[in-house]
Image 1 (cartoon, protein in one colour):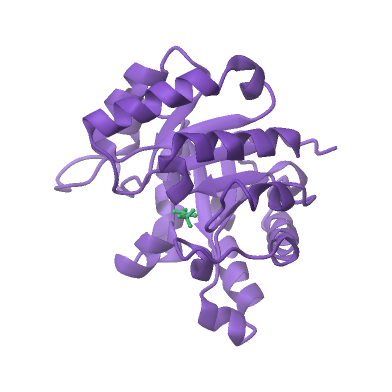
Image 2 (cartoon, rainbow, N blue to C red):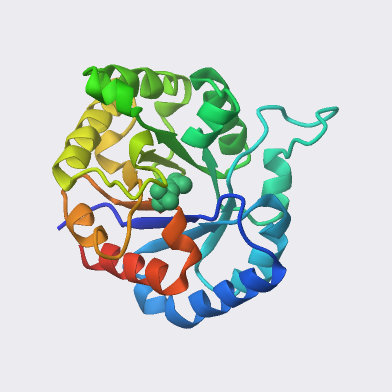
Amino acid sequence: MKTRKPFVVGNWKMNGDLIANEHLFTALRASIDRSLLSQVEVAIAPPYPYLGQASAWLGDTEMAWGAQDVASFENGAFTGEVSASMLRDLGCRWVIVGHSERRTLLGETDDLIAHKAERALAQDIGVIVCVGETLEDRESDRTESVLAAQIDALARFTSGVRVDRFVVAYEPVWAIGTGRTASPEQAQAAHVFIRSRLAQAGADAARVRILYGGSVKPASAPSLFVMPDIDGGLIGGASLVAEEFVAICRSAALA
Ligand code: PEP
């Protein structure tokens, strides 16, 4: 029996519109009830423009909503950026930082990601920090050194960070949106390594939740979530299909 409450986060990425979102929110409200939420924490991360819509649809439920990114600046002349205090105004309980798509496509560095996380934490917004190796890293036996560098960069805030405000998502880049999932054993080994590195970085590592992300589907979720160090999932594609997302939440509750 795990002592950490499982957590499932839906990363909608740059998908959706007002009408499609309304259908998705309606379906989530109908299926993710209080009893399920007593067993698994659930959060949705829609694109920025729909955070107000998330608040309107989820505000009277115990599901949380959050953003997919946040500025590393506090406020001011940073055209196009969205600050942590703005996210707080919109009721965000969580923000994802360091997603591999942002690391790869937008050149985000470990240092920038740590700054973003600190901005969010300063506004009392929980952070879900994504880490993970590329296929090339894995094939050249660099998985642990890459994960170590990504975790070590967080060390300036990990000691003393509240465990209900800090989550790590292990997302092997080769498994994101590819239909290729890490095996439960591969994921478990990476989670164990991340947990030990978090301990070295001063975090209360035994209590920090580490989610797995990378093509999780209803069929693959149970065998991943049953692993002792996997505390839920960060779900991309399947979070856009209500039945799939709900099934994944149920698997996390049962694990
Ligand atoms: C993600 O975007 O974080 C993700 C894991 O995507 P997918 O589930 O589609 O691989």
